[in-house]
Image (cartoon, rainbow, N blue to C red; front, side, top):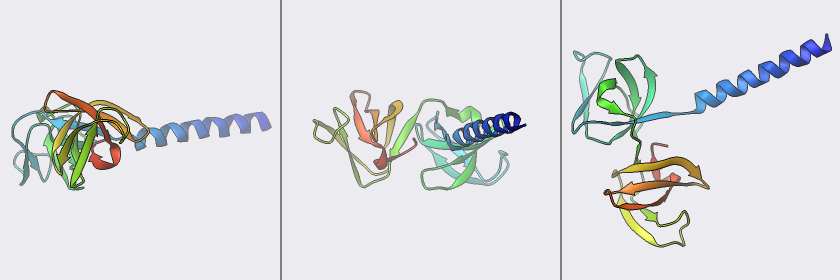
Amino acid sequence: MAQKTNFFFSYFFVWIVCFISQSAYAEFRSVAFAKTILYEAPSATSKRVYLVGEGYPLEIIVNLGDWLKVRDPYGTLSWAESKNLQSKRTVIVKVDKANIYKDPESKSALVATIEKDVVIELSDPLIANGWIKVRYQQDLDGYIQTSQVWGI
């Protein structure tokens, strides 16, 4: 009986860890077109809430197939047609000025300084010691601290 109980608890523990891990994982997409409308409800006839531009990062909260409930960098919830979003990842600067460095350390060469609310392409979503690899303006590659951006 003790073996069955231990097996049950072990199985239950693994299931809980997997569930928590998946629920903690955030899915992000970016706007695919120059202008995309975000709605109050999952219908094109509902109230139009915002107009966002290409590359703007959004967190997917609920996926209904054709419609996605999304959260923007400011925490606002709205709905977007899934056909208007792409899997290409971007992040948005959330501090007044953020620095991009050549290597993932603040002592390396400075590549660029980016203003708040600027969208940057995410080159690699892997976080290494609080840094992510980004691309700015198609030719500037480097690293930025994750604490300075939203969309990870």
